[in-house]
Length: 387
Ligand code: SF4
Image (cartoon, rainbow, N blue to C red; front, side, top):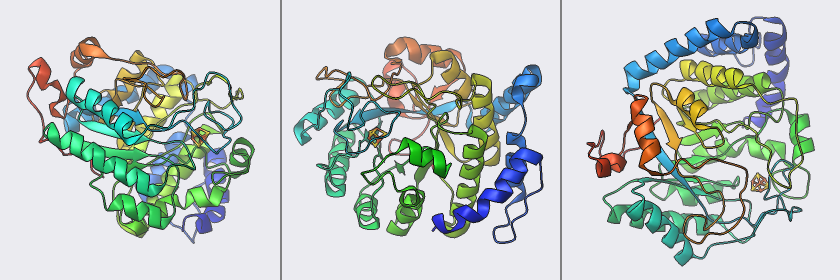
């Protein structure tokens, strides 16, 4: 399990990021590409913005050569906003009463949301999203996945995915038995001290080691396509991205494959949440970190999301090879039931206008979503990003 290795990796990672010391950890030697990526993270991009822009442009051109601007449009479908956890940065934390409506959708209500998104909006990749709701079991999530599969198949096919609480191995086994594109979980931060401060007990999430080992449990349960990532802005972002790269190397070595999807949420202040300042990477630093990761793991798809404004999303997506969220409601029933509130403040790039804007930037949907607008499908329905 990765938690058994974590303490061993801390000192060599700190020495490399602070002083440029070559990787020195006999218990865990790393590949050349990972070490190069770790050294690249040290770069102070603020002092060389023009050089960094050229570097980012080159990275985008490489992605264009490999992915021809193709992206996968994904739409989140929140199933519940009831949460037993106390993450200080989140509107849904258990103590918060500001700007939140606690909702757990019934199966019928959830299916209604999915039908609207698939049959009316034309989406083909559904991301089922869950808070840590004690009233929602792994069996419930598996049942929701079957509903999503049925709704998508009626429309010709598509991809289901899950982003929810960390589960035990048995719970992940239930998800592995469904036809699921990927299962995602963000580590939030790899800094154990910051993690402890930001995730107070009680609950499951306060257990740092348990969360670190969730990805081992996924693979042991038979899930082969996982999404990993950190919430940039909770701790020193270089250290978080560095430990993420090491975690991915561990996964690849242990299970034969790294993550299929890279989560790239960046902290935005949420109503009713504590204000956390001083750790969030600038736009340039953030884009640079994503590019460094993509250079190291070109087969891993960054999940460009509506926490960021349109301009930054376009910068992150340049060249393609990513997942991309256009429509985004972070409240259960937010698309059809007009429930109030949001887990965090986000944009919503709905409608043909933004699809056309993406086209104008050289991006093309890799799923038949845009057939409505006269564009041919790039790949067969049901195909998804693969790691
Ligand atoms: S981040 Fe997730 S687990 Fe934490 S309070 Fe928000 S919804 Fe709950």
